Image (cartoon, rainbow over all chains, first blue to last red; front, side):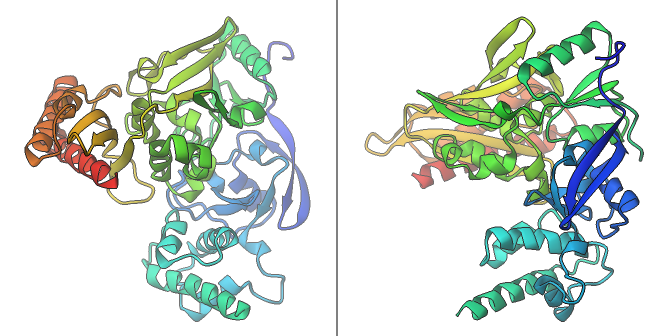
Amino acid sequence: MKNGVLGEETLTISMMVNGESVVRDVPVNRTLLSVLREDLGLIGAREGCGVGECGACTVIMNGKTVNACMVLAPKADGATITTIEGLSDGEHLHPLQEAFIEEGAVQCGFCTPGMILSAKALLDENPSPTRLEIREGISGNLCRCTGYQQIVDAIELVVNRTEEAKA
Amino acid sequence: MSIPHFRYIAPQTLEEAIGLLRMAKESGKRARVLAGGTDLMVQLRAHEITPDVVIDISGIKRLSRVDRMGNEIQIGPLVTHASLATLDLIREYAGVLSEAARTVGSPQIRNLGTLGGNIVNASPAADTIPALVILDARLALRGPEGERILPITDFFKGPYQTVIEKDELLTGVIIPLPSLNGRAVFLKLARRKAVAIARMNLACMLYYDRQKEIFEWVRLCVGSSTPKPVRMTQAEKVLVGNAYTDDVLQEAGRAAAEQMVALSGFRSSTAYKKPVVGDLVIRAVHLAVEKG
């Protein structure tokens, strides 16, 4: 406590974002989502509802999906973050991205980054989910175009391809 | 919407955190404790709360532990809903808490939201609370004067109101290991399966003796329908010592509905909730018996 004041108004946070080390001074009342979008230019994660219901802001933090709109920026200090921008190597799309295109799982596209990251986290943990487990895996992501069948089909396509490749 | 201005501090030890809460209290500063943030961030964004300082306790390692100590399990308040849903120790000894945690929000919310946050936020619709009530959970609160331990049912004063002092922190949830091998069920009614706040939820645990054909013991707690979480003792009394028959189940359902109305009074939702709470009790008891 300095001069009767508790805490800081600005903090320096360091994160690994999509494999790159990032250090930024941020006001403590900002969200991880706003730092990603406004400071780092990573606009794949979107702000939909802002209260953790729509999943458009989904990112993977330390291996787990989170709503970036509900993570206070200082909480991301020391974290490893993957956003949709980190899935492709710049030349090749991620198998999930390929499958979403093939199955027509992208309509307006607003939910797509979050959907793909939820699917990635699911497959990282359980490489051969059932259709029901896929639906549970993406249950925190709303698609307002209601194209859920194609999204589930796309994820299933990746599961089947992975299994075929193993066989 | 913008988040109000505040200062932020992340203590690394329990002592430090309690010291900060005490300093804030003594200097008249409004302090809020941040754990997973799934409730706090929503309240901040809506400007429902405008704290001077946010105290982030997520760096206090010992608050994330789950331990078995003799005949009890101790769950740290920072344990997430995702962990409650998957940890073997919880699934084995407090299965109904695992089931309840599985119904919270979405995978993303379960990865962030914590058991302690769900308790301290004290929403009447909290999913873990009915489960903790039937598990006879006790809560450990730590303040500058030391620790006190109280039954979970003594923690709540009403919706979003608890007995926690401004300089106290919830430091543990203590669950006695069940002495009898009961069957447990958690049911939740909501607009949809994911990301939905419970219209009504229910935790049920019972032991039905198939030889004697009687309910040996029954514990029922309904959430989102009484001002404070309580056991549905009237329905429990109807069941204990009786056989698993349609008549007994119907009578238990009526008893639960009457107790709910007696506790909550007639509200606009009563026309819906009164018959539904009865049916929910019947369904839960049925499922728990069939499970065994």
